[in-house]
Image (tube, rainbow, N blue to C red):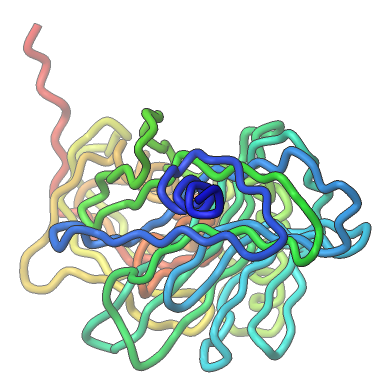
Length: 344
């Protein structure tokens, strides 16, 4: 009878402490109305007790992300399918041909670590991206472990699980605050416990300064190799004026109406563009690269912006065609700009 009580606690109480000599797994069945594009959970290991091998984390039908301990080495591991291709990774993350990405990090007992799997699918080109992240509470920042592209499939996440594995040793771990992010951006709580809705955007990165240097090196090499002109630069944003405007000066608080085309610097692939009609946006709600690049230009002008990733979408899995750490190129023609209405 006691055996069944223990099993009930491990599998049906999301905040339960799991101490076992075998794998402990909790599976989640989502309502049909919940289409998950993100999966997040809090992991805390209270003690390792000299275990030579231990892991605890989250996974779905395609990928898994977990804290890992092997002998005296701690790390964060992101496992992707063999048929996938790694298209982004954080600095110091090592990868092998089997689809394993690993970041050596001395995580400690008693600390909380949030693990987050994000996805973005493209039904037209039939592929899905998965990214694995960890939130480091002491630094109050996220770390991108890596992003993979899986061809031949698309859709939202299935077969969601939290898990803990300690081999023959007894290890105490606590998995709680488990949520999924719907495809409309809203969060759905998978646990019975009351917890605060996750706040993951804009994913401030522990590697942002290093990524700026990496992006600058990529851009400098392209200029040196003659693959692009040497552009002007302002506040970290590179630009080339294609046509001078003759209208009013644009302010960052304006609502702008523009024609634009956006492509990835790495391969020139177009990820978004206007067609026959321009689009209208409040400039101060767009990425920093647009704010810096367009403020001070004139209506009627056309500009080409080269935006390092940290001034674009950073480590976010923004869309299937915009992987994390992507340097972006935009050609933007401003046809109108309006000042904000002051009702006072």
